[in-house]
Amino acid sequence: MPEPREDSLTAPRTPKYQAIASDLAAKIRHGDLPPGSALPPQKELSATYGVTLATLRQALQRLEDDGLVSQQAGRGTFVAEPRAAYRLDSLRGFAEDLRAQGQTVSTQILGQAVRKPPAWVSAELGIDKDARVLRLERLRLLAGRPAVHQLSWILDVDLADVDLSGTSLYAALAGRGVVVHRAREVVRPGVLDAVTADLLGHPAGTPAFVSDRVTYGLDDAPLVFDRATILGNLLEIRTERAVNGLSMQWSRQV
Image (cartoon, rainbow, N blue to C red; front, side, top):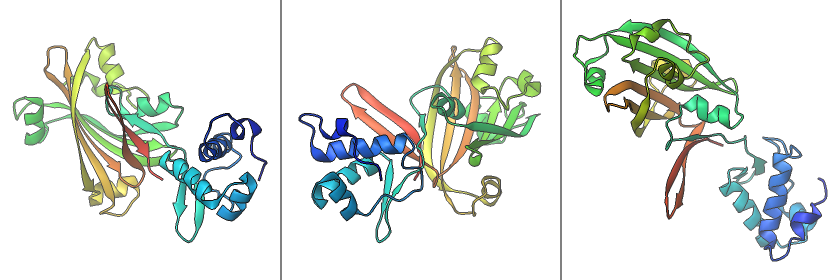
């Protein structure tokens, strides 16, 4: 393993465990320690850095708290897969948030046609039960892996012929002069049913998050109802709390 970087380990007034955590984090981010690789044994690392095991364990705990490593009892410490965050406190969609972080996100259109929605969707959109809207079914892939099944019911039926595989739904609405004003979202735990499990490539019963979102226009009338089923073993909800508010994100699960 390369020698510790002198700049991080000799920084004045920096606790040793923080300096070690910063050095290992830099090695992970620079690719010296690739995702899935095992860190050297704790005794070897503590000797390398010239610290006690207790100090080293503080550093490893800091890295685990930051989502950079996973400590597995009896096996060792492993570099985690890169995390990707999806902000719940913005009006950007799942794909937009992840692409903004440099993540590779692709979309498969599973269905796009004008249909009569179920009664409970009509109620969410505040429309007559016999009204017809655009039903859009998408599969979101993160780094080539299916991660989210998304079913949207959209009042603007003129989008039925628009290619939405590489275009944000919100951007498509904006292109038609429709301004998204706000959204109401509820996230609850669930499991994959047989159909969604097959689409996401996981067994039925796999833990999942189910997100229901209603998006509103400037006149505060509903525009879109979304139901997203998000793999619970790939993504997690993370929050940052501050005196001036709360930030909530989706992050890739280790």
